[in-house]
Image (tube, rainbow, N blue to C red):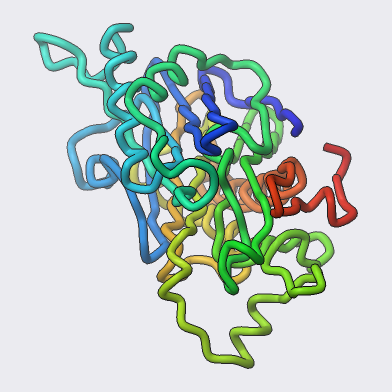
Length: 322
């Protein structure tokens, strides 16, 4: 495992991992509220409050985003974050109380570890309470605890992945991507074009999922255990429409580093939270977001550690200095 700086002032990250059940959650909090955006590209998403984040709708700030394992069960973790934020006086002021706007997305990790144990409200509460501006742990942690990649031939030929973070800064503008990589496809390092984690042959070499999809017919019914979920945080001053566009463009980073991406058996979802401290061109923010996202995906693969019979990228001869 490695760690990466948080990057954006005012953004807190907390993570809880169950290393026995192999699941967990990652909570990203902005106590002052941030302009939100979201874009869902995968065909099998599990999400909460994404409609509220749409540019046409009333709410102009979100206070947290939850990324969790546990499939649809894991959405319960967001309830614990809501409880923690209300107790802390954080949220949308409705007079009698403050209602925390907490969005969430989940990935499928039920077939690794103990499926009976999933992120719940108690885990979400603990993750929110643990959130800090300090370095973010990467690898088999938080929402990436049970993450795997390369499921074309089923989980027995997959590899372990995890959670990664990458941050870019130009003068005062900061853009950070955090992502839990649980993809159907392979992870490709854009710098080399080579697969670094993905579906394996019986001999333990990379199968190359895209090549196989060009040459054979497959039935994806057993391959629903996927999804890459992430968030871009930035200190840029963005409108809700611009934050939504940044989330959309950040998906380019997923497409660069995961092949194939956005399939019917993935629930790929990217959020954006903008704190509004620095004037910036949303086109530049989006470009940086895509670069940070692909970098975070590569880091997630290299930071992961193998579990059981599932190897990780570092065991295939790479560590990228993590």
